[in-house]
Length: 511
Image (cartoon, rainbow, N blue to C red; front, side, top):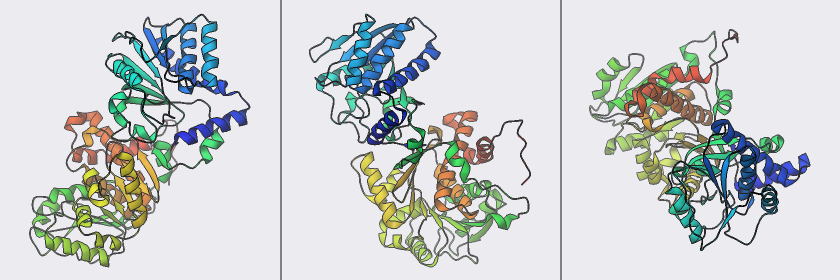
């Protein structure tokens, strides 16, 4: 699912109006109708006061048109026009006249107005500012937003929470609507998914307002939101006449004294996601625990007991996952650097592997092209440097990815995959996955997919989505609080089943 910028959405509006030969207010009417139907299907005529706060641009026009439809359906409404400028869009003015024609008189709010009373059991519709906001709200509008946020009412934002710009962090974090729910038109907005801007809505949902399908399909975007239809085509079905060698031999390298579990989880996830063979390379201290905990894997050990001092394997792996629990002993650092120079297999680098790269940037040039790096925010900062905000972080990360021809998986609430200047935002996952070992599991899954022949970007996209889905299924069984990384592994199979669930009546042909 594509994520459009504000400029692209305006372009889509104009294209749709021209191609469908409709006036611009007809598109506004579609938007208002979709908003009304969403609300009406849930309220069913309930006796509740709906207070609509409408700006004087097109977002406000949507709110004014919605007010008319709500009133015609018998709802008790109060309409407030937030009069923050002398400029008004023509479609706002048109809908304002339609409202007045029905003897509905809005209250105009100005910089010297008394704040309207809002009861906690009211519903507030926020239609003050839209996606085109390009400067900080006036101080008095900011105070109105603070007043709405303090009301404890359910706040439904139209398209985007007011005060939140579409392409940067807010100017004043207090002057942004804290929306209970956002009804966004046609496509999601990037700000929904970033830590500094995603906090302004609890939930969001898309409304289809009939923007031209051909334009939506052909327009190139910088970011995409990964949902099931985007991920399904990546899947490579297993063949009837195949064997373990068909699905690759993965190598998992890492571990040190007290941190062998990281390798065990990565290796287990690698096998569970479908890798045909997995060999773990660990220090001597990990031999017995790995052979016991993960009997399906083969184990090679270093000559050192507590850390890795060299990495020598007697086969050429199809994919390598490296770094989890590795530590930063000077001999381990040297071994990692030498291994990079002599290896050409695709890699997934995590944890201490990333920390070593950050401390030894000269190693980066030896990382095989299109390798996948999976940093959490602090590891990313060590790699790319400090950033001033989430948008600056994305620009720095994209530059690093492009310069080093690697794929970055930035782990978070919405893990984000960056490759060759394009970003993919994940839709699965939950707060229960913020637990020790979750990243080791992800590394193992991506490595296992790459070993099976998935291209690195495909493995990253599919692996991140499946990892989050397994976490969602696990959390649904045991809660966010009780979910462990091993619980994610236990639900990889269930995630596959959920992803490829078919209607009961459909017969699946034999491969």
